[in-house]
Each structure stands twice: as structure tokens, then as C-alpha cells.
Image (spheres, rainbow, N blue to C red):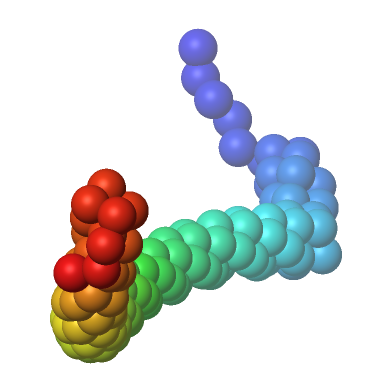
Length: 142
């Protein structure tokens, strides 16, 4: 078997290669460029989405940290206010206890004075009743 190369082979090869070169320039290269651009856009979109997700996670962590700090500060402020209020209330209670104790002492002193006066009055009345009773019993004045 011998292979004869004649012009028909060259024509067949040219008929195959010319449309291939033309199709490559007109169809295949633009399609491949479009496909590559699409792939780059998708990859870029995925990368941007990942970057945005990382940024959102970082902002969420920052927000959580700020919430924790604000909560701690709020608790500290609340405890400080409670302590101050409790101290003020205890101070006021001690002051009022002192006032009440002073009034009680004064009232007890007045009560003791009134008791003595009443006892003196009772003693005087008892003597006058005793004299009147003795005078009636004896029938004469004492």
C-alpha cells in the first residue's frame, strides 16, 4: 500500500483547516473568552461574597463585644447606684432612728415628770382623804 499524495489531499486538508481556523477565530476564541470571563466573574463574586461574609462576621463579633462591654458597664453602674442608694437609705434610717430615740427619751422624761406630779397629787389627795376619813371615824378634826 502506497500512499499517494496528490492535490486532493491538500484540498481536503485545506477544506478542513480553513473552516477550522475561521471557526476558531470567529466562534471558539470568543466563546472561550466569554466562558473565561464568566468563570472569572463567578470566582470574583464568590471571593467578594466570602470577603463580605468575613467582614460581616468581624462586625458581628465587634458588635457582640460592644454589647458585652455595655452590659458589664450597665451592671457596674446599676450596682454602684444600688450601693449609693443603700448607703443613703441606711444613713437616713440611722438619722431617723436618732431623731426617734431623742423624741422617745424626751417623751419618757415628760412621762416621768407627769408620773411624779401625779404621785405628788395622789399623795396630797391621799392625805386629805385620810384626814377626812379619820375625822369622820373619830368624829372630830385632826
